[in-house]
Length: 97
Image (cartoon, rainbow, N blue to C red):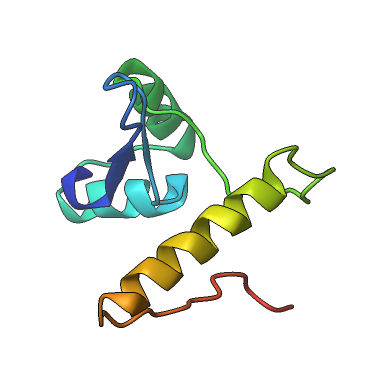
């Protein structure tokens, strides 16, 4: 049941979590004819090594000592690609609030 709703750590195979809420899992089990409480769902998740996970947004703090070096490297690569006739695409991946 959780197969399509399970994710895990690429570093630690034992670490996994689901995007379903406890009451959603209880409802899915009820559709299968298994009536359980949210408490039992918690116990089952723990038994099968599922961890609670929620998105955490953190603010960038400080500056990297290699920040300018990174931009210089990118600029050198960009110039060499363009000189060879290759296209260069720039993408800003920061989300605006």
